[in-house]
Image (cartoon, rainbow over all chains, first blue to last red; front, top):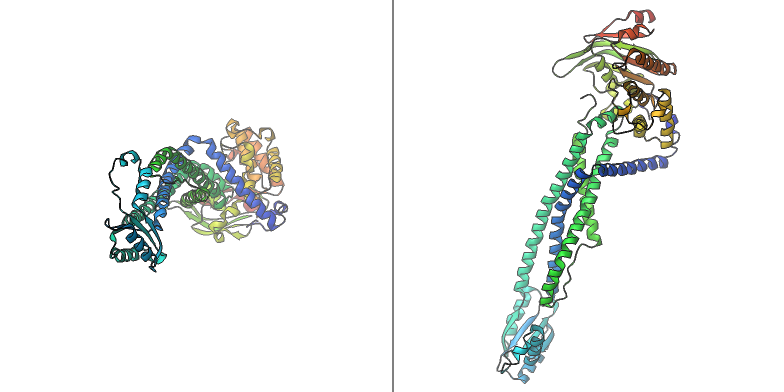
Length: 328
Length: 225
């Protein structure tokens, strides 16, 4: 295409026969520029490495917080559906009376399941679970009460409804008192909410930092290549052509920074795993520490690439226009 | 090819670089642009390559008014003009081949074509054997010739040269000028800005003389027109 001379450049365009060819060459050029800018980063490893490490660490923090939230959520989700009411039967009640209570409770429409844990059963369980087996043998009598575990139907599992059901059940003659383990769950949920909010806030700040870091790195690199940009403009390169390598550099920084963050999180989890499993062992739970899985890695990389692109785009828009060949 | 119509250029700060300059470079003509330093030669060339815009008047290339060219179209105007600089402005990081290939690369030319044309251009300036060298290992004259090869590699219809012989001894200068003559014989219009009056005197071409931003009448031009 020639603006001033109609028909000029035809011999050049002859080998680009169709739109498909044009598109093909366009893609080829973009890929070539991408590879070139990667090579460029390779040639200045120290400068690139510093930037990449800063990026990686900036991304590691939000990613770690996310992993923490995810694991806490995993713990709490184990309790969410278990809104179970424990009814402690009065000590003076006989076994028969307790059995009657169980039968009566089973008829409640609000109740899905009733399980009786007798004193003896509870003692056995306690012996095996707590590790106090030997000591318990010295007791004269079983100090534990009979407990009736009541699982409400799903409608009555919400904190409010469960509390109402509890007060109703406590009016039963045989029941000493009942316990609904929902308050601590509410507190946990509130804490979890707070944690999530802070992850979002901190994450937002750190991600903005990533944009600024990349933007500044690209700005320096543009200043560094001022001469080259001027020559390119003189021989008729469009702004898009000049901008592409810098945008690619931003994208590469994003990709590598994201990978660094992923590796940091994985290392941290590996480091914590033994400590966590010790804690888990004490609580006898089947908790497994979860890291970042496939999808989340993609999201992390996608975020990093997007931020890299935005950062470099802002710089490129601002500074490449400013460099004009006449201002030597 | 190039036509100036009452063109004035005042830089911010009030410096008047050009005042009501009018001249015309014919299609396929080779001409010189002379004057003392600061007479406005560089400004005139910058107006042609749209590095600057005129404060008043019109600049035409091939009949197209450059005032109508938008900033986005400027790169496409520059692709039609080969520009040669006194300090040659080669990129040190790249080899001679890559430097010369630059105008073709930005146009998205196929690499086979690029190789062919770069070889042809370097052959014309006699530097085909320096293909893989970096500009820093070349002599001043050779660097200048690489700059010329870059300017002609996409066969532009118009060549601008700003003091192309500025740093060269007379013999090398003559060589460079002969190159320009050769391109001119192939139909390229050439405008050479120089203060080397001895050089101009030896050649029978028109010369436009600028003095403090004004175009002096050229006796030879009078005869021709």
